[in-house]
Length: 353
Ligand SMILES: Cc1cc2nc3c(=O)[nH]c(=O)nc-3n(C[C@H](O)[C@H](O)[C@H](O)COP(=O)(O)O)c2cc1C
Image 1: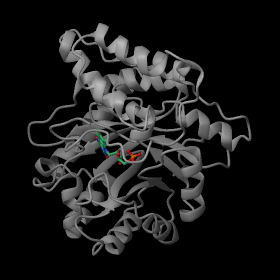
Image 2: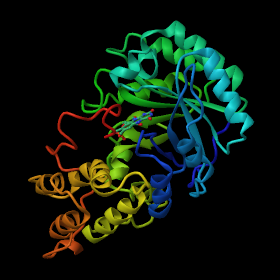
Image 3: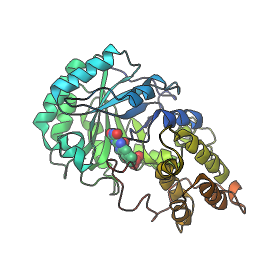
Image 4: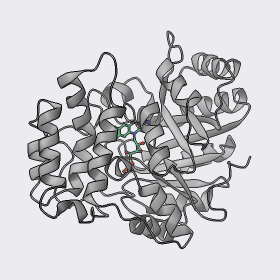
């Protein structure tokens, strides 16, 4: 089955990586403003004996106004409940491009239940889960996974299962579950998946810029680039990829643009039950990534992490992003080496960013 056409035909697709607590409806709508990717993926619907479709994720599908197709991601392993969830999605006629299975989540409280990345330990279970989903899903069925749990011992077998069950797209985050988010990315596994599989393969993991994306495409032959954390730091990244593919001048944001983006994020993170310091603290999870592009000493990160009100935040942002000559300077394409998005806390579960 063919995927929806990319924005630029005959060029690699761009895709938004699913990110729990980040790729909400509001964030997706923001990406629409800054330059949406070709394909979007939702946060995961949890699938278990008592699960029902989480309404905020349903909203991110139904009110996606980017004009780009969106895939609904599921996490779970109970065949009965996976089938039940697929039926619920189909009965509600959610406007999705397909259904994606999460086989990569590295949070211990997730993998200990043998779901997400935990599934990668058990190829025979994967065989049953993929078979069940392939049978129940009428449209496109896609998989997002890592290269293994603690090593690559099951990688070739799992590729065989992806092929056996006619998966329509594989997004490969080329790290093991145990490597979480910070190790080197082993792009050679993406090349291998391209050699073995008939379906398209998207490269995922540290696609930090257009230059890095081009390098990864050359190295892996991937059909698309799936981008997560770097689009929090730089929401223009999909637009930049499309402009590059189109041989157009690539937009380069200045610090004044980043200042306006933070204001947009402030609006996007407003919720009736998330006010004052709670909203500021939630916003800091995004600012942790933006801060990777601001200054070499990490002074913005240091100051931002200590603010307690919108007024204090405005002062910090203006000091670091606007005053002096700063507003007119270009925001760097790549994150600054050596800075860390958030000490001791990079896994999604328990700590969204
Ligand atoms: C905060 C956060 C939440 C995530 N949530 C999900 C998720 O719900 N489903 C999923 O398949 N991957 C999830 N991931 C993994 C990303 O989709 C992606 O595979 C990973 O961040 C590597 O890509 P990147 O280097 O471009 O960020 C999450 C990652 C982060 C940082």
